[in-house]
Image (cartoon, rainbow, N blue to C red; front, side, top):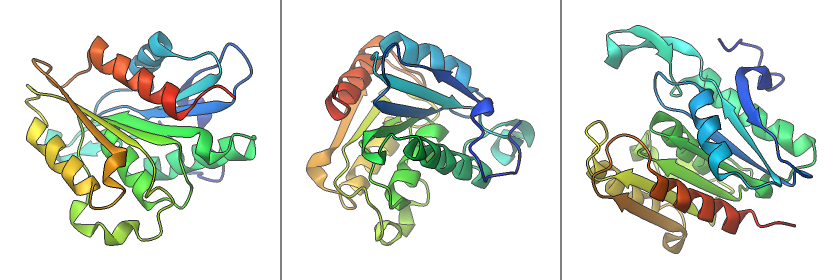
Length: 217
């Protein structure tokens, strides 16, 4: 469970996949409702690049109204938002520029990634949103007025058979994003037959995006 002290990032509450050589970039990837960082750490390991460190935080366990108030990890929580920002700050202090950091996530984690990037003054290398939506979409574009990511590339991927977050929500999110940042920087890909999960073709697209935005230096 994540604590309340936000003065330092809680990397003990994250799964870190280190690079196999000198780390010059970081990918922070946030999981969805009811999940932990472990599953996505395994997925990131399968597509990892040797000079990149991958960090998959665990969300705090909180009661979720839409799930009969069962206590489970949820990314849509102010403390987790603070933890994500703290992890970015920590990596910057350790010598990785924010422009060498990609923020991404699945479902709620993807939603939080989009919101964090669009409201952050720190310029990121890119954003990955899988099977997700833009939270508080009616507050944009005003909420992004001070954003450092209006020219940051965003990769959105969505399963066409997603029963939890219909692909139409993903499409509407992509169109909304094009009114907030440079439209040519928004890529929206869909996958036939894919439900609320990922697939090898999608992860191949994610790896390609990461490699393009975080080239070896």
